[in-house]
Length: 492
Image (cartoon, rainbow, N blue to C red; front, side, top):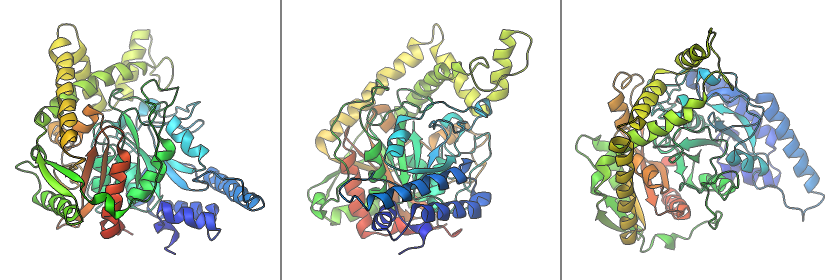
């Protein structure tokens, strides 16, 4: 058996179920790895070491008791340690959203996505670092410091779920939860050489996910393999009466696909996703992965998503507009940081000035302007119309093909500070991931190679609404015949 830190979710669950490994042993191994590497990576904001060990012991006791009653089913993930991005609430556990304004906020409720995993038996070892309120592509915008990429500590892990991606890549946990509003699961997955799912909008409850862009936010999973990601995802997914945007749609659960699933699979390659100026090695590795799938029976078709060029400006009108409304609640009165001031107006202005970082302030101002009188129709309203055209592009494409394959980002992980003074350059890192959020379709990112500097290259697969199972199956079959996902950072 692999060393405990290197176990995948599937391997860990098999060992726990067979009794060859205890949850306490596995959780302690994760905590030891965190202690060993956290000073170099800074993947976490809050750790719950002792509580995690207590929960692991309870899981072991439950398994031991169940051996006397073998017919009684146990929770599917009993005793599996995971981490949770610090924008998803866990009752009684600090939730900062990477911001000073929520530095001491203790939520009284747990996000549905997290609660369903807790019901399935997971053990939470901590909350991971994130760009403030999930606004960023590098995890440099956190008020609690930068997270470093385990493959190269001078580079970013991606964002905003960079803490979760780095924790999985550094073998601190077998899996972690993230969120994806414009690429915040898939881009960190690509930069850190792990696998990450952004689900169909409405597939996973947003209750307890601290809102950034309400019509774009999704909760997803990062893990080592497509199978691992699927195992957790199907425990999280499903209708939730606490979230009116969730959809009642059949849940298939994870089953190992037959290699025949690739026979006749139609893969669309959008010409708009291979742009002049993108890193040549990224294009080469992604095209090589597509060619590999074709060798195993898939057919490849060039397609067009003609409104892709508008995705970036559309996103940066809609998301900041929704953020400006969502973040209005942080006023120093109801919860979170409160500035010292004489009048109510001063409390509002000083609290927000002190509590929010530069990127959050920038997006609030952009969004407020887009929603202001005289500009709403010209900016926000027009952006919503173009968003409909982007969604229609995907609808038409999926009448011709089963999945769409494309790069996750134009480059591999960039250096820390490289885009800090150039917001547009930072925003362009999400140019290939934003359209799926605008259209609401699912996307899965996974490693398909490395560049000459030894940095992971990621590819994303996209499918029609609620077709996550197809994405997991294709990526699983690719990973059965390749080993990119098994590579470990030199730091380890």
